[in-house]
Length: 521
Image 1 (cartoon, rainbow, N blue to C red):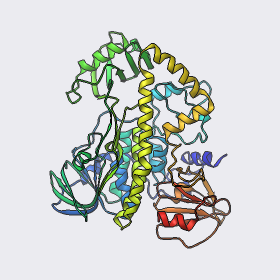
Image 2: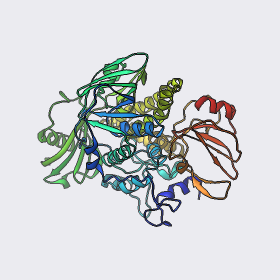
Image 3: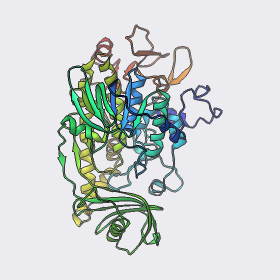
Image 4: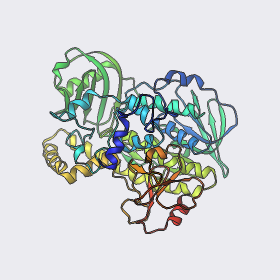
């Protein structure tokens, strides 16, 4: 078994008693997703002129994860959310590979295990007779990505719905003592040399930094004056949880028709029509509007008997020119928006938070220069996602020229190299930040692996990173700066891993270990 395969097996825990971790010890940090209702009882009104290290605006997954990363690093955040209750609309169905790994590095693997589900759409799309397949995703509704062809097949998405993830992260945030203030909207921001004054509907706050994690229509982004260039929408789409009078009239799975794209699974319908954006995206969404779209795209007279929830979506694609304006930063959809093709938005935003959290904590402590690397590292990753989602929209258009293009692209993706290229692009496993080192491992996000320590015991890399901070994996012992721990291994290569999982140095690097430690810690 490879290191990565062994790491994947850590979630099965078949050799341990229930309620124990990989070391056979009771879970000290396991967070259940069942405490959702209780968590919001702890919210409070804002205290006028309260002072925090960081104000995080938005209590979605990105804002919550960023807040937990900051608190783990020893700074004091507060989370502001304009909604009084969690949004129960249709959200992401899975957590991408590198985002799931970021959560696992903070000990949330057991909670993800409990929340993971098998979705009918995923099951139908990935079924293969006689062989269970790990989630590989799709490219523009081409389900040809084979996880077994990936360089590291065990690094895959986790089928954890976003609402379950929000419950997990809320419970963790409250466990860490983080204040989550609901029903508090941001009205204005004013920066100075010492920090940011935040005017809210519940009174003013003061912080050293503010991070907008408040979605694609981010108030923080607009108030701080971030440029947000991109492309206009070309389609109108709907996702809806519905009851149909005759669901058998719709072919299951993803279907391209002469009028657009439709996906039907029990209780859920997804459509796209390439006739421009909706006339009014903010208008109330009615059952008649969704029913008409389903009938147009499918070419059937199927009727919607009831609709539990629904949302409009488009393919507008925009990205902030920079993720930082002084003491105000952006993460997640506040920094970049794109179509949902490939299911990459949640993956992208959570890794934004992982990259930013420890750097922002260092800036609060006086090392502001580390923040320069946030945009430098994450902006190209966001740009790549916008690029591939635009390509996926182009590949699904309902015309004969696109039919021909899909055939060629599908053939290319079926080749092992094409499969790996697209698979790693969608999962984020192919991320490599430019750290100025030719060592191909430097700048990548480390997969979990089983380490044999000098005393003969074994431990997983991610377990050693659960408390945050950097980690030097090495058989050699040497003094280390504050914030870096040593995994004293019995043998093997040495590497320095940043708190966000990025490999910052190996013993094959051009730079010395002292240079890498000085740069990042």
